[in-house]
Image (cartoon, rainbow, N blue to C red; front, side):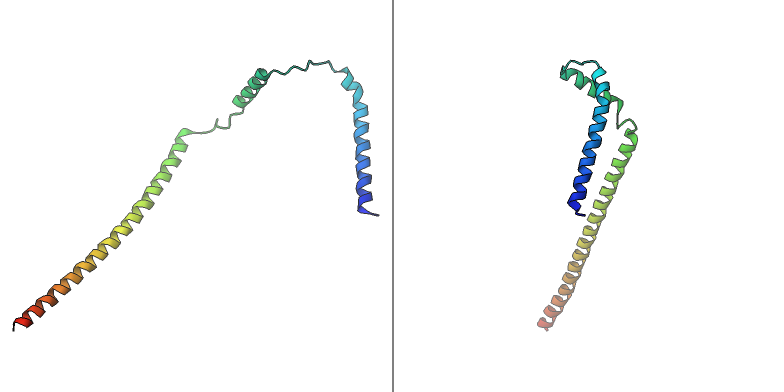
Length: 119
């Protein structure tokens, strides 16, 4: 059998099933009272607002815990920045120490040369 034939058979069986369900529910639907088709935006918005108030996703939200989390993240960030600047400062100190040592070595060499020239 072809896959299209199987799909078509399933489609028609589904349509027949839907038709049977709708046909059986028509008497119940006809007994329902008529509701005027009135569209009131204010009422709908008020209902939505009430449902939002009932469903409050922040009802378990604790301000203190949130503040603790923010402060701990800020503390971690400042510690990282402090560590980075301490590393930079250490490198600068090492660099200036090397320059100072090199200047001292040059001083003594210049002094030796100047004393040798005088002799």
